[in-house]
Amino acid sequence: MHLFSITNDTTLCIIIKAGGNWVTTAQIKMATTSNAFAATTIVAFHIGRGGQFYNSGFKSFIGEEKIDKYVNDLFISYENIHEVSKTIGHRENLRDLLEQVLDNRGSNDLSAKIRFERITGLELGEEVYTDCNGSQVGLTVAEAITGIGCINIDNDYNTTYTCYLENCDEKELELIANYRGYVDSEIRAYAQEILNA
Image (tube, rainbow, N blue to C red; front, side):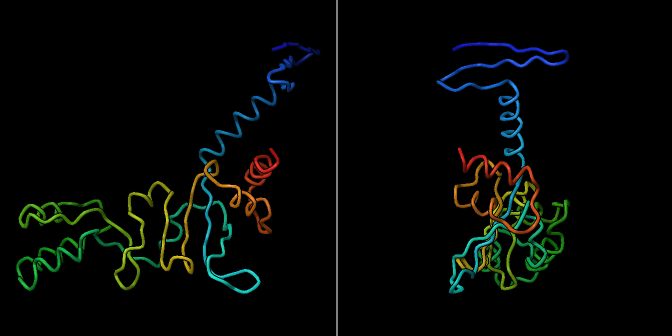
């Protein structure tokens, strides 16, 4: 490793030769900043129909968004609601308790859920998102709060997911780099930098 320093009136730049490449401290700082940015930036993709023949499985970049932006058409239920409903059957007192639990879903008040689970011994599980038919879409409320997750309505025909920029594969980075809509210049620059490396 070789080390040189160059100074002028206001700055000091250190140039390091490591592994056959000359690197400045400014480049090292930029790479560290870029890594921190990529580790916290959430990007979204959609898989659906598209391309020349409008085939399924067409992936597209849809922007810098968290997954909770895409839950407006979904409903909140519980992970084990179908099994619990079958188990309690038509017993009215338990049905009434279950209705109280369902009326409180999505809120921070878990007292009805805890009471129901204590009385019946049945686990409702986590709060999950469902489509209009009551089918789970693969996203929990806890995941939506983090911003990272997947909403799978119809596999290759309608799936939306988010991930951190640093976790994007080469195909996803190409989609970002070639995106024709607005995207933050830092996101596009990161994608191009990784693809050109």
